[in-house]
Image (cartoon, rainbow over the protein chains, first blue to last red):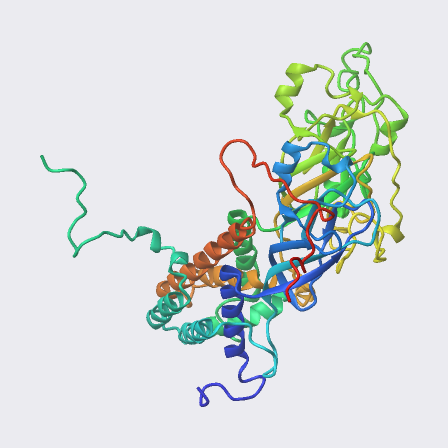
Length: 203
Length: 341
């Protein structure tokens, strides 16, 4: 690719953009990259908006209160309001958490005093890398898929939809994400050597 | 976070039209707005938490329809348009005045600014405004107790005086979808004053308000409701889904950070490219249109998978809820037990 993309920051930008898009999609679907967020709780606060400096919040894998040595259960606002309509009026160390959108967290209940810290293990989506020295957060098999994604976008940027589709299929197969393809739902799987599935028992 | 200009540059690379000779930037901007609306309507990714003080606070109050476009922020249209001649009337006896001076008495006081309703017996309901991009409500509470939605018809059948009844709110209803308003039923009879100061709204001090840790404390303040420092006690708390803001036609704003997660931008770019290659101009290429359509749909499926992943840590059981008993931390044996030698 050296004759197409110069090995400079500006020259490599299209490749870098493609790889960033691939990394984010792979982590978004697989949850393969996990980091811990430390959330300090405040008195009488139910809802918190998180701010991630290095990564994008995906979802919570585990929510641990180290002080109480207690694992919080997951719930959601609808379930919570059905199970305990007065949850907003209750105070105490939280037992359950809920994720709202991609940046809010809520807790059942609000702590009576500030000071507790939750260790929240989260699947995250890495920020776009911008330098050669930035770490790439991908397993080897996903690294191969990311290069195929970049090749797909290269062909798409040259106006070759046929080859772009070929590389798109390779990318999805390597990543094990064929189920995301919209035409996947039209495939039918049958046992045997191409023989039609026996749909009724012969008399 | 990215900007529209950064995405526009990428889109132009795939279009092979760096100088905009085939697709104008404005066409791509409108395609972008369409694409993001499609994706977020299908996926519903943006959810927010907000608290609304009562009585509601509006940035502007106006009377005639034409005034609306000269105001910004939260806008309240006061009084009543008389459709027969386009004028605005305050009381129902006014339209009939030229026929008879014995028009109907009004049952209460008309107000022009909603907070006035708390100092009189209002003749009509007091509407509260929702977020400008509000899409669906997930949860609502008044004074930290849940309130449920109800249709205007159901309410009217149960209580003919529903427009003016006061007490502790049990329900909320929406007069229509266009005005982006909701109304509490009954109207709160006790008020917890939570006046917003400009300094509060723009305050970024840790520890103030509903939101504790904010990277963008002003993200809702100029187009929707004021939420930053409202306490949920004595106020309405709403958890809701919203749609993204359109990219404005003023290109001076195109370098502003978009209020969307970075990992969604690739899919909006794909949706924009799908639309660009569908346009009836020299750039109409069906094969590339179809390719980018597939990429967009893969993105939508990826985002739906992401939303399912968020529920992975749930404990599901059929029937009665699972009885989970935990040992309290004081009852637990120490991690060093039994001691090894």
